[in-house]
Image (cartoon, rainbow, N blue to C red; front, side, top):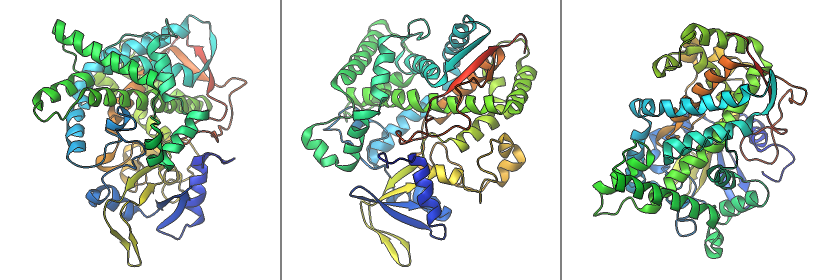
Length: 450
């Protein structure tokens, strides 16, 4: 897929529509047979009802090849260890814990707007680059307890390591494919996902943070704290090791660094080319906050903001698909049984754009997600963060940081197209998940009043 002249999400759509009368269709990822599931009942069964038969993602890197990523929640195989780690991390994203992170996020958002307000009445911004600085600073603060302020110090080491860890272009893209296609050969050659430089940086960062917290009796209710507490409770079983802590902290960073910034970039593009939507959202912001500071409770009550983000995630989901591995023989139909080890794809991008489920799917229309229409939505046709027990654990975190920066931005700026804005937006042929072919160049025009 990644060597094609057509964006991978659209190639997935091609498979999906070519066999429109079938419940599932198979293809090969080089030597790996993979089944695309088109039928909604089968999707429900695979991801929820029969989860014990499909409990894990395809393992493309093992702990002995990459001790950090291999220990992350995403890469873990299903079973008691994964369940323990999921249960350990889940409390990080409760409403109470997110409220505790709110001020850290808001500080990062105000640094964002303050930086661009200094640059004139209209400033052209590569939004993906700007939002990676924002998400970098949030994750550095809420996961690692590090204050970066990338807008004042864009070359900080944390951001440099983040860019290196999440850059899957060029040779790194081929390296990622190598892991996916030949994990055993990758094991023999000892090729990890992250370079030794990146791994060492995050190991040292976590160990230094944990040591300082213990010596100074510092408590921050973040990912590091929860994992450390889990280790104390299970020290005899050694369930949570230093590499477990580092690997999962690194997972949150790499997952949030790229996907959240891409989601925000697509959303801002849609606001720029749909000024009626932007104006309606600004009115809601004005009615909600007027001249007061953004508050957690009022932010969560903003219905149209929720609709805008939901529609952006429908049209431009962070991942084009989610996968599962069949761990035992499974009768998919009267005539077909899945063999143990078969890889299964849920085609998120195609489902989100299927006109049977979403009328006029290329139109950006937040009203799809108003109270009335949301109730009519067919289950398993909208899953931007996956579905079932293996869905994204950090979705509420991602949505909160998106809401904060969008409100803060729109109070300060009108988001407008500029000469180099690509309209309509085209997807890149060189990235597996949706990303803009020519980037996200937009204008931030300073508001005289809201």
